[in-house]
Image (tube, rainbow, N blue to C red):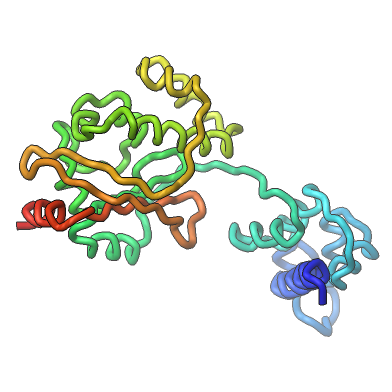
Length: 275
């Protein structure tokens, strides 16, 4: 089977299994008589999605037909797909996933929090797509001490970077780090440019920081590559880290950054914070 044939067959099979999970009652249909199979009938899905029965049947049969964004959106609604299922359907149909930006609310997964807290020598933070800090571990809060901030949750990392003089002072190589971070945020901004919050945030930061204004005007882009960073701590001195980023499983809008001590000297200094 060719790769494209396999894609269409996978799309058809996925639609059939999702259709079988939705009851007529869930879809708002009055069910009359007994049904031979669970879930909705093909003609019911087609009617609710506003497409022809023949065309929808071809989809489930894995025929090589092009699917529009409007059709995928309709099927997502009719089949009541969750975020992961919706993304999977868009991928199978080779249709770009629409951008829906919502702020991350609540606490991160307790198992994830437990995992990052176990990294006793590696400061770690978790950002949402707006670069709000939604999670940290204990060692990060100890390693980066700022007056008036006991922990960094709910702070915005980019705003700290350009408007908090004490945070800026913790990085001896602030200028180069600021360039990298602005380039990373520019890429995120491009993905989520329809988000009004993003535009308002950038406009406000331009007003508040001349250096951000200068860097933003360059339109430079930086990818999520590994970097080395040095932080200055009044108690233990300079500590060099290797920064690694990870996507958070189960939530596409979260990104985790882990700072691992670069050498034994840095590790020994971090250990003093746990003493």
